[in-house]
Length: 435
Image (cartoon, rainbow, N blue to C red; front, side, top):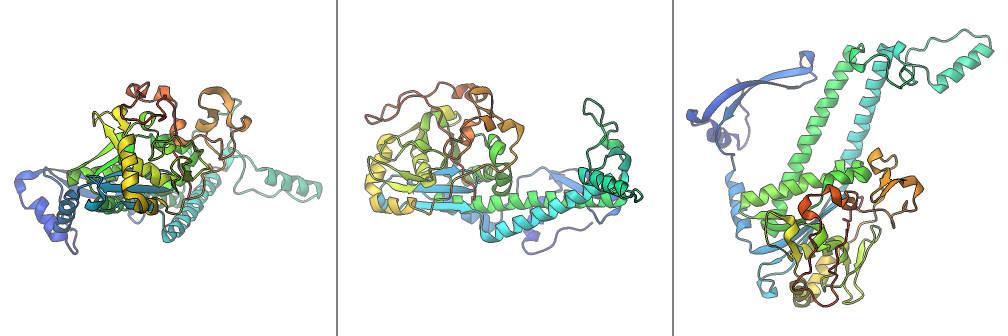
């Protein structure tokens, strides 16, 4: 048996293995390993009934973050994550406003493009291998048919096609005559498939490590008491699936929530129907914006800032009657306006980061995005909303009747809202942007 070795490993091993009374059982597991015979590596895993391990540096960092008397808000979208925090007393004498934006760096984008090209090449190699080993199950492509016809007209012998490039042979109903599980698979196919699975597992683990590092940095700088809008990130994949796979906003928010709990705080979720953060200003004025509008410009108070930062700052002023029920969230307009007056210039500078360009869905959207919410049967290609100005925001792609029952009809008037503040119930969307 080989135990993991390296700097900092010995205290971790002592934490889990020093007390044999906590040892529970040993399981035989397997993992993908292209270099192992058969493509699998078998390992024995010991299950220990004890808590997780935290290094002294981690405990010190969490203790320091727990002492931060800050309240903050998070605005997550497709390409970046914006965080804004204020002192718990909302007094400039107790501290200044902090703002952080998390997005992919240039090195991460280059590495992502390289990994995507490699994955695309491996998938094409798998398809060619399957077609070559099961040539009778596929027909020739149009290009191969045209070449055969030209050779026939020229009196040349028909060329033997080793890898047919056409569709799979199917019956009149479109069902393949032979199931894919009955195909002959070559050794190279199995090896490439194992390497592809290994690469996917490695990429998923890397995304998890990146999310935990970012969560540690955010909680360490903004404190463990944060608020984020309650959005269903899975609906964003209808329009921004490829971008979401790169930035993983859902994974980031989940990691931040876990780090908040381990630090002694909590990440609260606020309903979008009752807060409308993306369509509201700190002064309480309603500022309607489309998805293409990345700059928040208030005609009442003159605030000009990045819309994501403004939404994050407003999230810090959300109050929940029941922390476990997002529908009880209400925006404290009076406190938000007071904060804007007290922090003044510092708030303007913190929220005026460089805005990102508008979002546009990638080509080839899935079937789930083919219909407009609220207009059954109308295809996306047939309606006018084919530009960024009319395109719905991600949580608008989830109809209200598919939300939790507690979210429907909960937009009650806010007692501390100033005159003229919007109180009607409205479906206001998120504001993702592609990097």
